[in-house]
Length: 211
Image 1 (cartoon, rainbow, N blue to C red):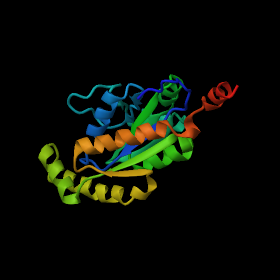
Image 2 (image 1 turned 90 degrees about the vertical axis):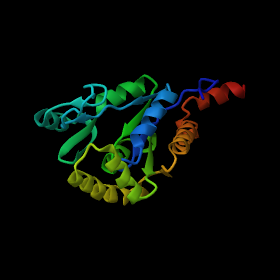
Image 3 (image 1 turned 90 degrees about the horizontal axis):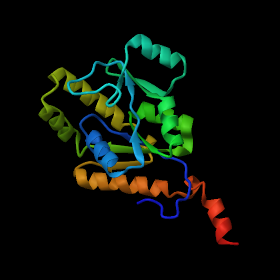
């Protein structure tokens, strides 16, 4: 819900992480559709576009040489190696969204979440989404019918590693029901927006209130 008093506040850097297949992308799409003050941080990647993906909307696709240049020039808030490809969050894009009064949604792994927290500290809210079980996670990956068995095996091995870092997050949710999980994520975002530490307009409001 929008603030009826229009108090100024700092933007939320809202991180969603999960193993591949746990439903993070679905939750992110639903959240963006429901929250007009929230915008997606579009990552830079060296991987090739998949069918239907649009450069600048799904990812910023670059070659390895350009990615290395951007990293050397400190153009990323965070970046990581994932399955022989590289992914990074462009600093200028995030700064522009915050300046425009937007909250920023990040779809990044635990390494990215850790790096972002080290840079932005209290503005970062980290949410980890678990699958109901590892067996269910594998079934979801197999039902996609887009990856070979060896790719699924690699994703499952990575999933086990990602899950082991759950304690580096502020909130954890189990996605055994997508609507219930989505409701939980929305509740977390709403509560974090209302934190006193983010309400930069409170002092002015209170001064007017107590005159």
